[in-house]
Length: 350
Image (spheres, rainbow, N blue to C red):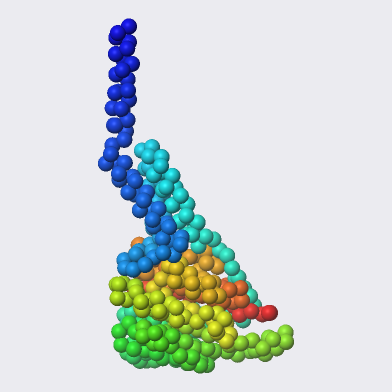
């Protein structure tokens, strides 16, 4: 009887020993720290709380954080850390809810018969060979070309390579280093200013054009269509605490759709992904991502020699008015960015 009582008294000690082996405090702390980190990241992303450096640039890697969260959930489950597992599962679910929809095509493919083929590319201050740009423009039958990091030497090189033969009209806001931009077009262009220079940041050429024959075609429907406006987008990158105010100002300076007297297109190197609250504010001002229309919102554009790559180059079109019939991300030698080619269709009705 005494021996049985002693066994009963020893059982809790043995249970504590087994529990202690399972619940190594170092492992528990590591699992909790991981869960807290993912939960905080998910909250920052969900509510747009990113502030300061380096948090703002880190938000660009949200899809990779989501990918890392999946094995973290599995490990927490195998270790039976149930409370941190629940926190991890919620965080991963939140991140999946904001990231996964970019892989699902949604939007207008074709809105009319009149198409405009647009190419945007950051030429890295002349790193891209001008002949390669001109060859790409010819091969892809580009109608409008938006370039970033355009220096005066780049403009001269493009002229010498024969860009004017395909795209004879240009709005040249070139400048030394990474500051310049330009827009080249098969259609006559009107220079509408530069929202980048207005805030003391990189130049962002803003121009409008009309498509010959489109006005006459729409007249048959009793509608006088407005011109198309394009901004070659390039805010200062958020690579330091000092550059963040200019980055925010550059994105805020982009015209909202209702501020544009026509169909607005924003194309270029935004130095921001859809995981940045500032970028989502741009979209909310009346734009749709061309990549989203084709479910290509996670196709990375920078750095070109990645992975990891993040999607900071975009073509944004007005809501449900301009269709995106084609969307393609292109590799171009000599730059750390990938180019974007989009075939856009202008509305045939209203």
